[in-house]
Picture (cartoon, rainbow, N blue to C red):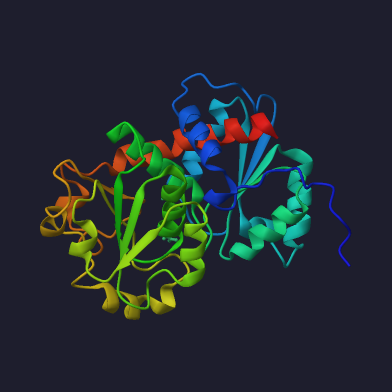
Length: 306
Ligand code: CP
Ligand code: NVA
């Protein structure tokens, strides 16, 4: 039997619903603080990557620096998770030196194993199931653009994946409407819908992307083939092609003040046309910059309360 762990009070952020609605609002407020408390002064944060990253690595490193801390980025291959030593022992080791651990993993279960034994907070920097740091930045962008999130309509055109799942959960907590449109077979399942409903929100699932974006304030998309899904690439591209690409015609169906978001990296011409990705309604670079502000807000809150 696994002995009871002494770390029950540690807050881990593996998905957006590890936060309450009030905590999410507090973090978004803190994200706008240009002079945050130096909660990481003299401390480190380990940033462990099993998959490539541009935005997450840089935004997290800079957020740690802005909080007075020292980021240590490590490729998982250098650590040898589960072949040099177990994920649990990696977490226990990193916790000896760092105030928090961030991890980008192939399998969400690995994060759960690390969090189960870690004496410092573990933050999900993307797993196959969830991307909470991205959702925080997305909601921050919506808040900046519209002065609030509640009652805004967010339409996601694309895959029921880590990004759309975390965004739907975050939208529910923030009181936004969320609708997703993708081909049958690539839509939220009942477990996802139950989890979203538990936030107090709901995800509307529709086949027709034009129906989804009608009246939307935010039109969002992500790649059709996520990291780790390379074997399914041909099948997925075939399922999404033609109908589920954000085009000028699709964007024209949204609210006149609608913005376009994409977590990036993008495949221009595939899930969105170049004219939409780089056009006047796009806020993708503001959204990318917000990764740093949102990460700083989250860490300021997390390490301020832990
Ligand atoms: N959006 C995002 O997480 O980007 P990276 O994969 O480059 O970190
Ligand atoms: N869904 C994408 C997001 C990348 C930031 C992936 O997991 O590859």
